[in-house]
Length: 75
Image 1 (cartoon, rainbow, N blue to C red):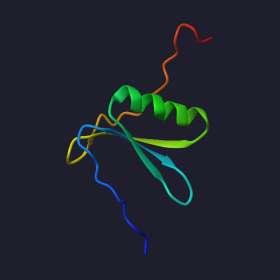
Image 2 (image 1 turned 45 degrees about the vertical axis):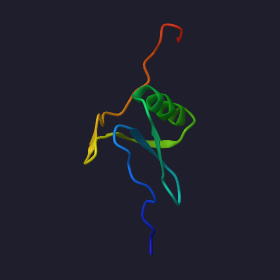
Image 3 (image 1 turned 180 degrees about the horizontal axis):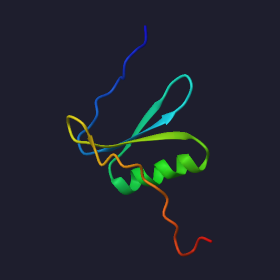
């Protein structure tokens, strides 16, 4: 029998999941900027990452997947 998640989502935090075998790892950050930065770092190193968004108490909001913006210092 598969065990369920061992935590409750906290309202107002941003969540993303790192897809791994055999277990997925769900992570959270308090701010959107911190969550976006961590999400992009995991993508950069080749991990399969799924953005969940901001937990609003009953469902996720702000579910659009963050994308890396090109800065003026990058070529």
